[in-house]
Structures are given as C-alpha cells and as structure tokens.
Length: 457
Ligand code: ZN
Ligand code: ZN
Image 1 (cartoon, rainbow, N blue to C red):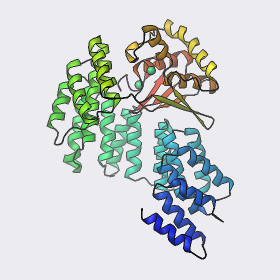
Image 2: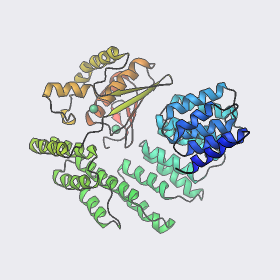
Image 3: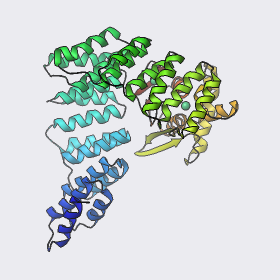
Image 4: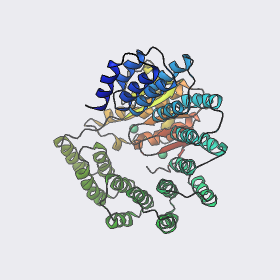
C-alpha cells in the first residue's frame, strides 16, 4: 500500500484534471499490477491519447493478458489513434506469447505503414516474434533488411536459428557476427552452444565453450553448462556430462539436471536416470514433469514395479501432473485443446479426422506407444487416451480448418509427448504438410516424416 494509493489520493483531490494527470494515474496502476483498476480509469477518461492506450497495453502484456491486449489494440486503431513504437513493442510481445503469427504479420504491416524510419528495437522485437511464432525465415528476412543491427539483432537471430534446429545457419551467422566486429554476449553463446547441440557437434561445442572466457571474458553460467549437458547427453556421453556437472563452480539447478535426465531417457540409462531424478525431486518436489520423465525411463525398460512405486510416491507427495494443453491459431482466433477434449464446436469432425488417419498411419508402420500414457487404466483405454492427446486434437483441427499445403503451427505448454511426436511425423507424410510444434523446450519442424530435432528433445 503506497505509491498508487498516494497518487490516487492526490488525483481525486485535483480540482481540474488534464490528460497528463489522467495518464499518470492510469500508468501508475498499470505498472503496479493493477491492470483492472487501470482499465476502469481508462474507460472513464474524458479523452485519451497514445500514452493512455500504451499504458493499458503494456499492463496487459506484462500481466500475460495477450488476448485482451490484441482486443484493445484493435479498438485503438478504430478510435483513430496512431500507434507509436511503444504500442508496437507491447503488442508484438503479446503476439509472441500467444504465438499468433497471423496477427503478428498484420501488425508488421501496420509498422511498415506507420513507422517510417527503421527502428532497431522494433526490428529486434519483430525478429523475436517471428522466431518464437515458428517462422524463422521471416525472422531472418527482418534481420537481413535492418539497415542498422545491434548485438541483440544478431543474437536473437542466432538463438532463433538454434531453437529451430538450423545449426549451420546459426553458426554461420555467428561467424559473420565476429567478422563484423560485433561483440557477442552470454546470450549469443547460449545460441551458439545449442546450435552445436542440435547438430551433435561435441568438439565444436567445447571449442566455443572455452572461447567464451578466453576470447570474450564471459564467465559461463549454469545456462551454458546446461547446453553442454544437452550436447553431451544427445551424443550419449552421459558420464562426461555427469562429470562436468559435478565439477561446475556452482550447485546444479533444475535446468542442467533436467537436461541430463532427458539424456538418460533417450539413452535408456535407468541407474543414472534414477540418481538424477532423486536430486530433481529434492530441488523441485512439485514438478510432475520430472516424475513423468523417470516413469518413462522405467517403462521403456519394462520396470513396471518401479513405475508403480513411483506413482505411489507421486500420490503420497501430492504431486500433480500439470495438464497438457495445445493451441493453434486459425483466422485470428486461438483454439485450445486438453487431452480428450470434446468442448470444441467441431469436435465430431476433429475426432473423425483422427479416425480417418489411423488406417494409413498403421499401414506406414505406426503403432501407439503406450509408454507415454501414464494412466491407471487398461491397455485399450490407454490407446484411446493416447489417440486424443491435446497435440493430436490440435493437429486434426489444423487439418480441417486450414488450406491444403499450408504449415500447421501448434504450441504446447509442456514438452511434446513421444507418441504424439511419432504420430506427427507419420501424419506429415500422409497429408503432405509441415507441422511446426513449439513445446516447452524447443521447436519441432516436422516434414515428410522427419523432425528437425532429430528425435531428441
Ligand atoms: Zn501424446
Ligand atoms: Zn522433434
């Protein structure tokens, strides 16, 4: 209780209020996590200017209310107020969070029409928006066209390439960055190291890791160690990864241990997996994802007693699996799906589409991997649940609601499930579409039966 209340008291006492005092009070509320109150004041303003609209837009964006931000932005355009750089920065961040590339593109067009001189900050925000919304080509276009690029422009594009699994492009751009004399920072190196990881370049990874401190005086953080753990793990050097983590100059955090646990799942290393998972359970007792990973490791080794014991442990500790949720944007609208969701108006068509894909998928060699269905249910029911995971429902909806040949862009709040990943590869072959899936960890560009992550995530 302080600043905003004090400002409000003064504001209420004012005999006459001009737009500047209105804007000040609206901004004070919006910046102090009181967006609802700010909006009420905003609605009562006798007149508004671009500052008033920006205050609410920024408040919505910071508060994670992306859809409200988009609604307000459209209202702003209708009101005849000309957006400025700050408006565009907020609204592009909202698009990034929602992964709405269609609306992001429309805003890009507005920017070209409204802002005449090129702006580095806005350019960087556009690169982020395109990269995070799944179109690395558009991100690179923006980068390429920027007359003035700063360190952030280079870094954002390098990181974007790495997240999309385009390792060669990321490393080539890094070479150009060095050549242009732009000094990389610790974020640039996160991009470079994860590019090495995607391509399985162990020697290059160590080279860049050493070069960081030697050539640029950047001390590696736990994030860089996590990239190295991911790289070593991907290549099956599990013990080297473990050794590196033990020797780090700080305590391992959940991210670096999580990378090692994922590696244990990929390489079916039960002993190390159990050991790493125990440490993770101590660090984040509530995170159901770690239990799921260990359970997958046990299940793949057919250690059903261990699976059952782990499930008991989860119950005892009250760990809940965060529900998986996937969404897709079609014609400026976001459609969200949960597992077995039947709430969508087109539910029947969605399920029929999945049904119609089952036969051709089977013919190509797909069979449901029930290791990924962690439910206390009979085998047959497991297959049912698996078939109706949120990713699959979103893909099916994408198929029926977008023109043939266009890519289907899905976002998932958690890591993509192994069975859905495999199914998506088969579906991409059958329907001849690219499926771009952004999960909690990375991007998957699934095309003609292959994924850019090379089945490691
Ligand atoms: Zn799944
Ligand atoms: Zn993938």
